[in-house]
Amino acid sequence: MPSAGNNCLDAAMWGLPPEIVLTNRLSGLQAPDWYEKLERQRGELARQIAELSESALVRKVVELISLEEAKCTQALLLKG
Image 1 (cartoon, helix red, strand yellow):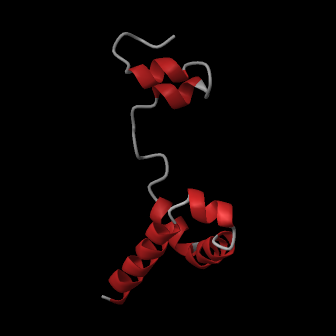
Image 2: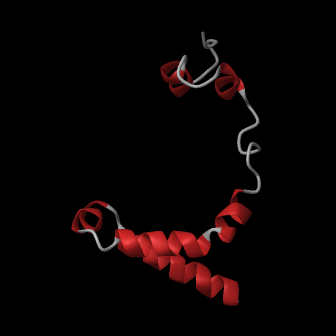
């Protein structure tokens, strides 16, 4: 059971993920290389976004314009 010092999210999540996940206080240190992994998958992610954008439902639900703008902004930063 969560201690009194834990936040509401910890209490709500108790029993769902393994206890080690809930009691870990080293926030952000679990995957410090997330950006490098994302960078390696950039081409595949762009292909998946293009494929998904062909769906009317996806276009209605997902902010594809924001994803496209983020991709363009990142490309400009990389050229920098």
